[in-house]
Structures are given as C-alpha cells and as structure tokens.
Image 1 (cartoon, rainbow, N blue to C red):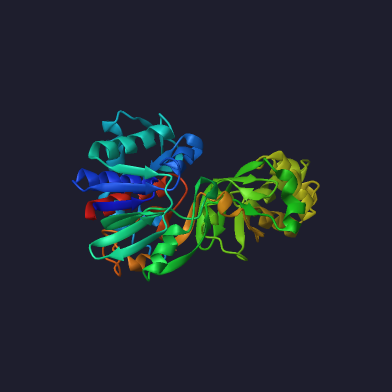
Image 2 (image 1 turned 90 degrees about the horizontal axis):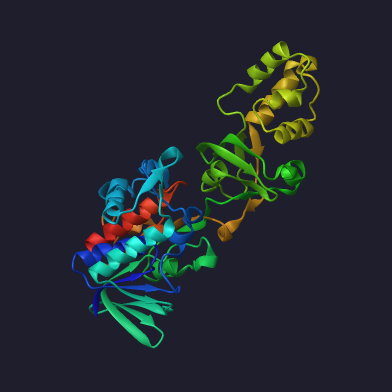
Length: 390
C-alpha cells in the first residue's frame, strides 16, 4: 500500500510525483514504456521549449476556458525557472516568449528524475496496466498477476498524439469507467492536407515559406506558413489546426500588415513597366508570386490591369480560403485537443468530483495550449496542483 500511484511518466506525471513525494507521500510511478519522458526527449527536435513567459489562460483551448487559471497562477514559468536554476540549467528565449533549455531535452528529463529520486519516488517501467478499480481504502491498480494499492491515483497518461511514443486512450477509458465525461478528442498542432484540387494548384510550392496570418474558428495567428507536398504546415498553420474541424475553411493573409489592393494600385502607378509577378515578388517568395499569377489567371504588367483585376489578386493574397481535406492526424500531431471534461474536475486539485482520490493531469485533460511551450507549462502546473493535493 502506498499513498499515491501516478500512471504515466511524462511531464505532468513526473512533476506530480516529485511534488507529492517532497511532501512526504509514498509515491509509485507506473509507465508502460521502457523509460520515462518520451515526449520530453523529442520536444522541439530535442531542444525542449519547456515553457512560455506568456503562459496565461488566453493561450489555452478548453470547453471551459477559465478552468486552467487556478493551476497556472499557482505554478508559473518563473517557478519552473527557479527549479532549473537549482539544478544548474540555463535557457534562452526565442520569439514570442518561447524558452528553450541550453542543455537540451535530456537535461530537463534528468532534472525531473533527480527530483523524484531525491524525494524517494519508486518507478516501475514497461508495465501493462489491466485495470484501475475502487477499493475500500482507495484504489487497486492491476498489473498482470500483480496488484498495487494506493489511497490516490493520478492519471497522467497523455492523449492520442504521437502513437509511436506510446500514446493510447487509456486515460479516457479510466475516466469513462468512473462516469466522467469526455470532450471528443482530435489532433492539434498538426499539418493540414490539400484537397485534390488545391494540391494541383499549390503542391509544386513544397518547401516555400512565407509570413502569414492564418484564421480558423475565430482564432488568428501571425507567424510563418510552410507549403508541403501534402498540404500546409509551419507555426501559423499548426496553431490554427487546433481550432480546425473537418469541413471548416481556413482563411490566409499572405501579406499581413499590408492593404494589398492599395499597394497594387500604387505599384501600377509607380512601376508601370514591371510584371505583376515581379511586383508580387517584392513581398512574396518568387515561386509563390509566380504561382499566384498562374492560379488567378492574372499576369502581365499592373499598368494594363483594371481595378477589378487587381482586386481579385488582392483577395487571393489576403483572403485566400482553403478547405483542407483533413489533417495528418495523431501520427504527427503535437497535442490532443479535448479530453477529460474539466466540468468533472476540481480546478484547484485536478481531483474527479465523482471519484474522490482519482486525479487527471496534463494532456489527458481538456486543456490544450498553443505552440511554443504552453503545453509543457500546463503539464508542470496541473501536475504540481495534483501533487500538492494528493
């Protein structure tokens, strides 16, 4: 019999285990993979964008956008930086508040494992969990022929993204077993796929990148966009993808900050001998400028084009509407949107209202952050909140 069993040795599970054990709780962590921290190690290509200075509730998707406020306020990016300082780790800031570990991802994992080791956490890896069942004194977790008992169980098993790293629906099944609702999950932070018609128009641009504003589902992101053979990617598209649902359009502005119609009229006046693709090339990659002219069927010198023709070009640049055929799915998705309904949980402790002693943290919960370290901050904050409560 232990005090706490944490199921899942990812970011949220390790933070929860270290926090609870530091309070004197006897903690066992169960992980079905051979070693902890798989997603930590691959994050940011191994560079580990471990948090974001701007991690506030506005940067998270949830059916209840207020749910994450309590945990985020009680464990902030500054708290995690102080932990890193105690372990001698350093970091640097990139754009948009993104913080990266100078010593890369393995150092972050080693730090969390050291915190667990110092506090006396027990690990069991490579284990298959058959069931989580209520017991008279808490919960029974069945592992093959073995059964572990604990007063509290924390589900930190993640979502469905990146199945090659061991993602499973285990956490959702446990939640449903105890009568908790699930917000239907779907892939987030994932490239979007061309329709056949759009592939024919734009597929030759694979490898081209450009600044853009991408809008979807009421959200808008101004970052770079990347054309691929299969569709659209890049930070702006990945961000918007978390809001995308099948059949919905995505609206793209390839000239953010410009009034394209007025700019083209000025070019007609100021550069009457220039070709339209040359004019567009002042603000767009050459291949993209040439493709816009081909797709719109409008080319030649702006001096020969009427306002209506320039207006069509401007619309194609600033209100380019794409209806994706789908996304690349969980195979490449960085996160899972949706999960255990936050209405079922205490925002302060992450405990299930219908099942005292059962907690859910991290990606398994219906709280999903933007690209740029926000999801790690949710893992640290929610794991810490549960670790303080168990």
